[in-house]
Amino acid sequence: MPSESKKSSDLSRITFSLDAFDERVINLMAEKRRQSRSETVRNLIHNWIESNPNLLTSNYDIDLNDITREIEIADYDQVIQDSIQKLVRYSELFNEIEFDILAEQLEISKKILRDIIFEYRSKLEKLGVKLRIRGKLIVKE
Image 1 (cartoon, rainbow, N blue to C red):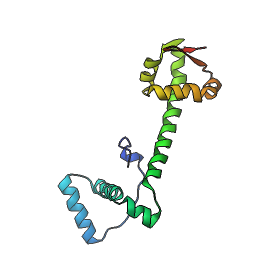
Image 2 (cartoon, helix red, strand yellow):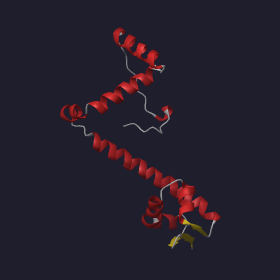
Image 3 (cartoon, rainbow, N blue to C red):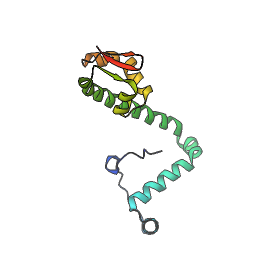
Image 4 (cartoon, one colour):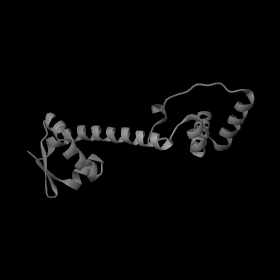
């Protein structure tokens, strides 16, 4: 399933040729939906993929669940890395801050913030940020 947050300029491009019949059908579909031709083709492909998981598995040995998990992991890792960089910048602004407020400021869940503090502690310390959780507060040491 494509990420809705992706901008079209971030998506990879594929160039292909259409015969006259296919081009006419795509043009009519795009016109009826008031979409670009590329958006129409992208939607056709996406709908076909979602409607044919068994065919993808049997003919191409492609498991859509595996692909979804891989994308989620990559997205999660990017969220973690971006949040660590923000946290390093924000840490200059406080000696202690409420856990909820920092999670909201970083635009991440409290679980992800906990993961960063516990699982990425050594990375944060290498970046000069030593944090501890004390009750509902995050305290900078």
